[in-house]
Image (cartoon, rainbow, N blue to C red; front, side, top):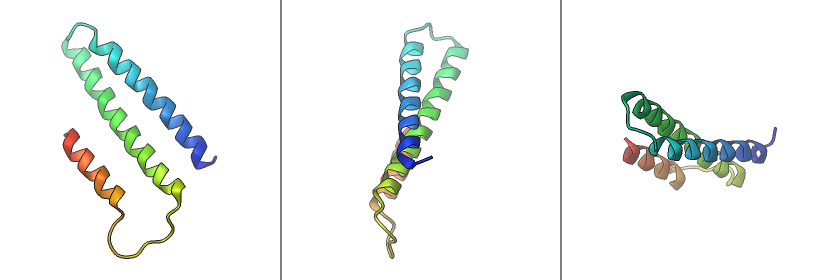
Length: 83
């Protein structure tokens, strides 16, 4: 399976999760609903991280030496802000 095919599947999954999150936000805010909503938001974050990582791999910047690529720092900052 090619990276582009995996990316397409992950993007579709991210869209489905986003739709589910939006639907749950409109429901009554019970304890179980909030837990499911939190789990979906966390899963969407993981899928977004996977998409970013695979997009960067698909770009194929080649082997790098020295500092980490900027996109790794961006992903780490995004994770910190989500927590």
